[in-house]
Image 1 (spheres, rainbow, N blue to C red):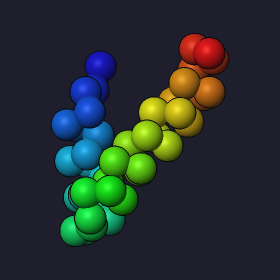
Image 2: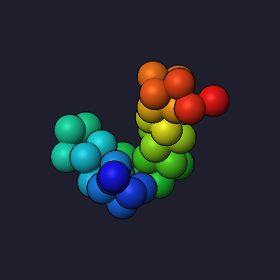
Image 3: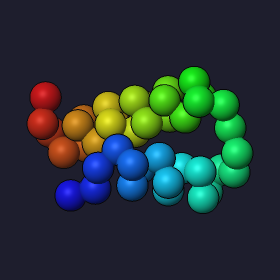
Image 4: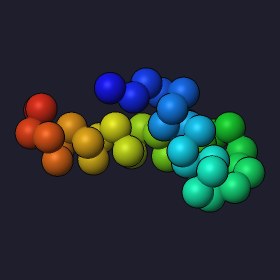
Length: 41
């Protein structure tokens, strides 16, 4: 399973440079989508 560092690296590779706050928000939303998609709630 990927950890938060793998997720952040993937986001930065796909989107390019961004602020730390935007990266945190992106990781947060991706985690939420994963939990919904995986029915883990």
